[in-house]
Length: 81
Image 1 (cartoon, rainbow, N blue to C red):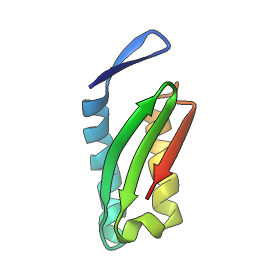
Image 2: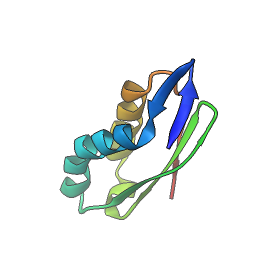
Image 3: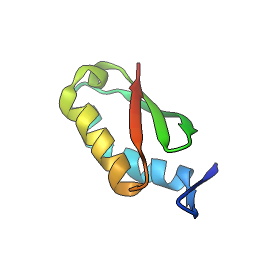
Image 4: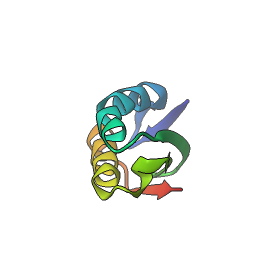
């Protein structure tokens, strides 16, 4: 999957795999969970976090921070359950 942000082509699959590798320790440390890219709508990225980790605020914050770190042009991250 590809999309444009500020005239830059970003390969979402690679960023997603990198992000998952960085977030996985948080997920495991909170009882596990599943992270899924749902949709990219303009500058809004929608992800689904499910399982026990979905209710842990530090995991939710870390996920949002990591996404914005990887794709600085993101306007908003929406976490869906």
